[in-house]
Image (cartoon, rainbow, N blue to C red; front, side):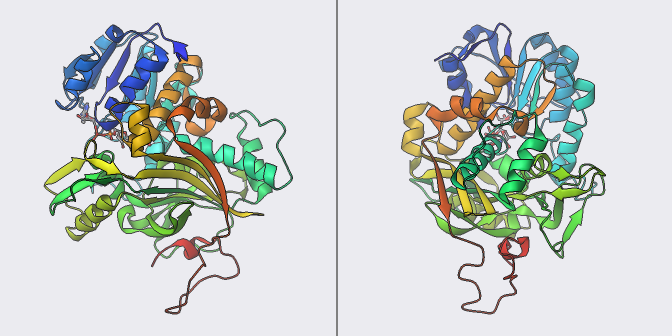
Length: 472
Ligand code: NAD
């Protein structure tokens, strides 16, 4: 079904796993002829996919020096820039689109090449917190201008909508149903629901079990989505939204000292920081605490303050990611080489034989303990639903599609984060592409099974303290 008709032109910047995966969904669900779409990308990768759909393909990397000259002739008032590249500054693209009166969406706040590991910056300055602050600082100047959606893929993105649905489910199941969900613009009302339910911690709990017909080789980084994207964020400091129930800052935890103050960072890379988490099919597991935009945006959105601005409620929020097993081995090897990237990289696509991506949100600390809500999508289901996707990419591309449609339907909203978008509309558009969307309660806590083989310093008075989740 076509969700929307679009009169303008669409430029897709970057055409890797997400660009190639979203193109067939755009052509299927948006009334927009192929002649009005242009791809601009830095590599030959994907040229044959563009040709399959009759899309113009421009091979040219965007750089600090050329991005405005490269993109401006392709875009004018009412057009759309869909940024699915790596190494191109999202904030600079947002500014360009605002100047040209062009709609915009990206899936992460990306810096220029090298920005994630630029040692001339402090760890705080190269954090996602700092990058998000820069993007949301554009809000006042862009108010009423063309819609500019920042960080709307699966996570960040779709998971913000899962959180809202999970809150409504928990409210229903604990005897306090929300008759009319507040609009997404009403942050205080949504934060009030989370606070009233007593949600203390939100994990983005993901287990990817996809496997290929050939194992990872030594010297090769293998993943189910962008290797550059994953290594980039994995080498940033671990970051988490810092909840109001937390008793003590971790020994290596730091506040940023500027901006919204909803999050902290740890003085170590996320790819070497592990936490205990849980998903319905995997059960208890260790996940990497990789920094992500949603850890910060969720914590900020669900903050309640009293009249003098003091924080009275905020959940702890962070990613707990168990990537596919070959990616875990790849991270292990990368860490051993002191974060020097392997000479070869491989994005798993056609060689995947089985497995699924179990991606959801785990809300903890409420009356029913823990509740996971999310998508279970197998590689078989993903291939049947859309070409040029695996299970991981389809969860992202469906959410990109939904964000693009929402921007086209709401074209004058200025800067918008995922939490500020109507969750019901996004979930409705994504539904055919998410496999089983399920909610499951669990009596799991991070104290389960602890201190049996060896003594462990845990806080038994409150299972939901970050120190209980962290693997040390
Ligand atoms: P990929 O590595 O498969 O592809 C990246 C693409 O960007 C390639 O086509 C490459 O040629 C192009 N590119 C690189 N440098 C460029 C430049 N200077 N100018 C123009 N194009 C350039 O990555 P992917 O898996 O498709 O991911 C794309 C982006 O989406 C990444 O930033 C990634 O972090 C993000 N992502 C977000 C989510 C989410 O859920 N929010 C999930 C997956 C990926």
